Image 1 (cartoon, one colour):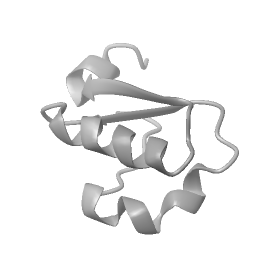
Image 2 (tube, helix red, strand yellow):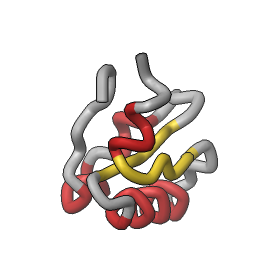
Image 3 (cartoon, rainbow, N blue to C red):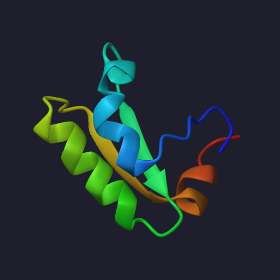
Image 4 (cartoon, rainbow, N blue to C red):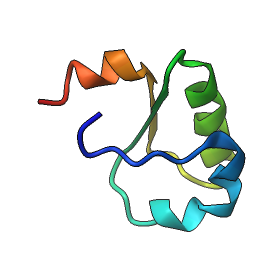
Length: 64
């Protein structure tokens, strides 16, 4: 998806600082499963501005 940053789920806990100051965080993946886990990890670490966008196809339809 244009403008997105790929952060593999297994590395997410070590990259939390990249999200500081972001107004909204949209997570997505190929199937929607990992994005659900990513949302949970972010919320457990204090981020309340996380949206599970589902699959990359779902998110890509809104980004032009």
